[in-house]
Length: 245
Length: 264
Image: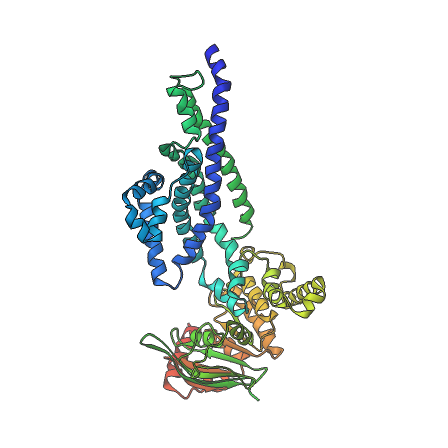
């Protein structure tokens, strides 16, 4: 027990630092993936057949393969690709040249950037499908009522459809967002120093503590706390939008 | 001078002819009822008038202004279409109220959006909003919903919703108000209150086109009845003539079914 009391402040501090990185990845992913997902959804219901097909294939690839593999490809792919492009080939095309010279910057910043890209693309594809369902789920009559009242397409979207869409997609979106909190742990695979990485460090040995597993278990508390807050927040939001049906 | 002239409207969906050479005209202040079995093209005709469908051929004139000449393929801007469709109002079978707005907000929303950027709006925004609100309150009072203004659609009965929808359609002061089976989604008890509101409008000489299955109502309220069958106008004229003394065999058959129902 004495030993635990000694270890706890050290571990707690390290896990906090790790969880900060987890939260950073979470926030950056949401900031990128929500607008990108909406953009993809707009493309998926657009009149352009090519655009629709491209987005459908992208969504299939991203949703159809593990996020962990996507992380590995995005982090290690550019380096492997660069080494396979010869100097002559690079000289012949600016694009190949760019590929040949691209590297994630070394260290934690590079890992964070790569993880952010992978998470944003991955989550944008899930959000895209939810948004599309939300837009298409609104009865045609709503649009027609707006048209007959002389509204513009923009006015119909922002004044009539948007809030109904937000209300409809809130439950699936909150589901995804709660999953995202936990999925950030996958970035451990490219050694992003998030909270699981921080907990695992004490297994291998760090700051004079080694061979203890409880810090790893304790990381679960962070996820529970974050998702508890999110659950309460979404319940409030749902209640707020409950004034209409 | 007729307020509305419809000439040789045709419309097909794929291979199916939905409207086949529809022509009629109506005088201001009159009520026109369109009757006919389901699938006869009544609703499509209303949707053409409201620019929700584009006819393949034909001309629509309101007060001698050509609103649509399907023969002229020139591109019309969205702004033009919006201006033109405001000659018409439309009350839907399924109300289509905006669920996130109160009854009053449903009525005032479009007028507010149209007021944006007008000189009146720029001069005094709050005064404009007040005028629009007062107008909305007045319209809701006319359909008997003065005490329901701040309710949301889900807190209202179907009949009340439809009356809000009528007030909403009246808010932009259309030349011609169209009804697409306004009582078909309502049970008989609620039908009465909606019909009473429409009757009141007729008594005040609102120009109206009503697509309906309420034969007694069509007969009482309208100045003219059109019986449509298979995308064509089969018979039109004074309601008493058409109902009591139909000239076409098809009209007789159709009406016999309704009389049969009445007798039961």
